[in-house]
Image (tube, rainbow, N blue to C red; front, side, top):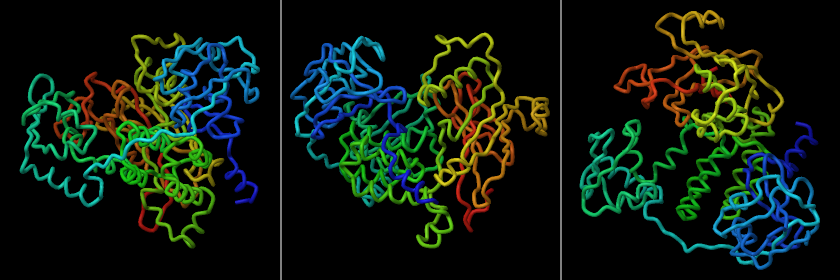
Length: 499
């Protein structure tokens, strides 16, 4: 790779990939704990007006950035006027909000101020600290041992009756010691006695045991490639949020970070971690090691990495998960309304895909049925291929006739199905293991199937009784709301024959 391009990768400071609306920063101060308040919204940074700006508002900013409190709420562009839009005006915070975006205000981009009125803060130099929390089962040896105790279903001191749809669906032998180490299952211990009743949705019954296993399950989950997330960066942020909420120990978080696939993040996102993620400060040596590993993956050709680093590209670290963000996926639907909603949510951000409500949103009258979608992806997650694209076509095939319409050959036993075709010629060192995801009610992935050749069958939405054509989770509505094709490239190695 040319030297200027390598330098460009290392000097990406101003990118906005990976930031969320409501992220905040301090600019142009002499110290890290002071400066002009800037907040991120819709892809850009902007300032905050000093109208009604007080210590309560300023403290929200300081605490969000890791400082204990605010000592000064400054106006009149005390650290110089900013640039770009003025995002918020007339703020009225209570002091408990995680971001200024959660405070009462005039709303985004609704202000009568000029940049001479930009708000600033001075925070205490003391950062927020929490007492150390030592949780019993987070060494790898003990965690494995506790998992073995749980799986044995012996010597239990707690019986959990799981109910679904008004009847008992499962009985689990459990241990209070093990449950106490799992923050997600701790609420079960609030009931007195040795018998606990747990009510769940019917589709959740198959995973109840996993839910109450030792927390080793969380690390096991992060180790899997069959994990549907918007991006690896989103998964890293989720780990950080989980650690914050549960006051997880340094060792616990370090173990989870080992399962994050840093090479699957873009170079600009990797660079910004040091500025935008508190986990970086707490685990800086680990982050720097992982980021360097990832940047080598993005900038050094496969042949050289294999020759001088001896890297095994069949390791999970170098293979993508089920990334549902638009860079690596596309969706179709057999329903007009759901098609429009799925496309609308993709344009506004991945998370909205799981929150749309057909009762409140109407598709335009001229919006057509989307059973077909063309899209492009990079050939590979490495930045070496960032401007080399492949074209794909995803088709919903409910009938034999629809197969013929889109150029597929299907028998009556093969429909309904999804079809995926590729145009273009990828690098011969790259293979693909593409997956199809079936979403139920836009809220959860009910089934994942492999594209074998150019097609994959759509499983039965209701049957979960062991049928070979049944979805993992039943879909109570009787039909899937949308279907995703997720493109998963990887470097071919001597041990992999998939292409």
